[in-house]
Length: 476
Image 1 (tube, rainbow, N blue to C red):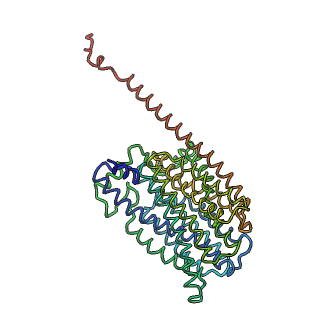
Image 2 (cartoon, rainbow, N blue to C red; image 1 turned 60 degrees about the horizontal axis):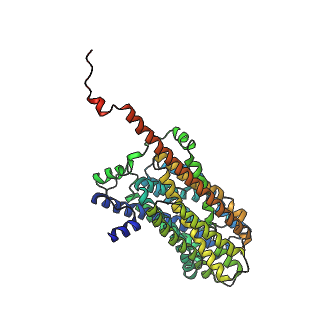
Image 3 (cartoon, rainbow, N blue to C red; image 1 turned 90 degrees about the vertical axis):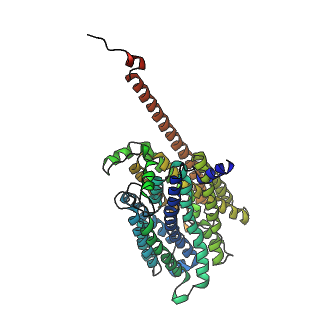
């Protein structure tokens, strides 16, 4: 009995039958393996730009002022442009074709990054990489919500998100190794070899996706799923799901409910708590204060990501067990506020600043939880769910397009005073948005319950009682 409880806590609801257990094992292997590998290469690409900047790219491309921030901003603009179209394409093109195709596009563009001669060429490449990479994050959350129950979703979302963080973690280690062993080989700098290796890793994973990805339950033809498993994959989730053809009615459904507004607001704000990691502030800090080798500048920030992975997996496991998503956002805000205060007090010792940057890695835990929460909120309408998930990431990236330029410009290194104050304010705003979404979700549940009770009462009033049923009809 105790083992059953531990198993349920660690991996979610225990399947009710042997058939469902077998189905879940297959889904976990084939969906998570491809999506995690795809997201790993996605984040590897993004982290490689950060690591290349502090490993020779800045000097070789003669980058000045905020050129580094502009690279990230242009990528973000492409990401915003591609967000909703990519998710809507999953309603038209089978995901097993769309995901790998987009992966091939950004893999080829990654190869191109290794041959740039000036920062303007990199700007153009990063924009189109943003468009193609926009398919991965929200698209996968949409797919996860299509296959998994609410009690199974948090952990899978956490594992998926952690795979992206693992890409960031691996990038630092990879860059240090490349800088050490491949720098100058074939007349290419180490940072150029980094992009080549990234592209080499990406393309075989896209081929794997073409072969094994199962699409969504309603259209899956995966060779490894039996007819019974395909039927079960729909039956276990479809009881209350609205299935409609793609039309303008979708806009009405989305815009007349609170879900799109509330969830978009929540992630638009809370996503900015990841600014310490996404802008590689620790790497820029170490590079600016001096006294560290290139390898150390690449290695040390990996601790931020490592703590982010640990926080994500622990929090995802806990939220699936309790079904409460909001406490993770409170934990994340606490950690980031403490970290910002420690760095803001510049007289604090270097060891405390190391601790603060690592502690801020907790911000990554909110990503998986917030999208699992949105999947749960919109579980009854799969088209609305696709738009809400895409919009959450779109609005966050719309903010992120200018946020680093304003609060975390490279010229502010090593102190990032404005950024630390902005982080404290962001955490306070995140707590407010978290409460708002929680309140609106609870209100929706109360209204739905009241409506159900009223319907039941009405049915009882309209139905004749057993006594009346048994009364003989009066003879005229």
